[in-house]
Amino acid sequence: MRWGTYFAVCAAVISIGLALGVTMPLVSLRLEEWGYGSFAIGVMAATPAVGVLLGASIAGRLAGALGTERVMRLCLLVGALATILMALMQHYYLWLILRLLLGVGLTVVFVLGESWINQLVPEHLRGRLVALYGTGYALSYLGGPLILAAVGTDNDLGFWIGVALLIAGSLWLLGRTGAPKVDAHSASGRGLWQFCQGMPAIAWGVMLFAAFEAMVLTLMPVYGLRQGFTQDVALLLVSVVVVGDAALQLPIGWLADRLSRQRLYLFCGLGLCVSSLAIPLLLHTVLIWPLLVLFGATAGSLFTLALILIGERYRDEQLVKANAHIAQLWGLGCLVGPLLTGAVSQWVSGHALPLMMALGAAVFVVLVWRGKGLQAVQGT
Image (cartoon, rainbow, N blue to C red; front, side, top):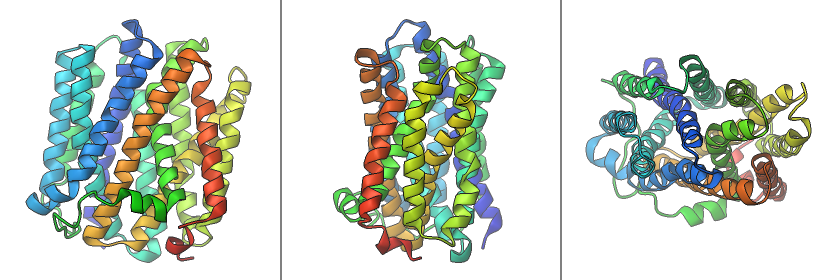
């Protein structure tokens, strides 16, 4: 076990979460100040998802041609460049292009980084070490809104902090070894439909968590403002959700090494459905704070368990290919979630965010209850 490499790769991927946690709410709040509606903000939030789909399709080929470590460092620097341009040239349509570029580059880092982590960890520690990575990544999203609240949204310092974090992430990877061996052709992103047919609950769980993460960072601050909260409290709502996301990952990883993962999946889906439905009812009471913790914890566990299951089954280029499918599903969730929720919020209900999450969680529970594809990979 290369512990130094494990922590270095975790740090590189986590630097993305921290950078996005600073810049994504800043972009949404800036657009709100400029007078854009929920749908336009949702379009901006969904744009990186198109980049995710593109990035997932080329990650394996790039790694096969140039090497995993080199490609990850290059893509982190591309992300830093895109963020620099966002700080210097603030225009809605230009930001759409830059966020597309950001989505492509950072998705390649996610696919290769999570494959590298899963390749490194020994089987008897897989649940806990994958969950430790998930906890660190979730905490990075918590740190982003907190940093933004500290530096303020009336300046561009948040963008420059994001740039510094992405550059630092590229430096962590210098000289690291032990990445999956990748064949450029076999590690392509083809075969997504077959992957979804074989593991529908895992596929839907990834899409649901992707939609959750994109909406929480981009639409939840706006949701809070429109429900009568101040900007600081709206950002605090996001931070509390991310605390919940981080809080349950290590216990889930520990349980995943010992119990039925299908039961854990079902429990998390039910918790997400119930907590989502309760948010509009308890939004202006003191109970909203523990409820948001539960909301984040149950949603975050869906993705952690998916990574554990994928890492258990695959190695080398097949692991990279599976993670490319996970990234493609992530992109679809990031694309559909903010667009659909932004439209429903503007034209149907101001509580669209929690209600759409409840609907998605209900579908997830049905898929897990049926159990198709889970028994084949859980190995417990």
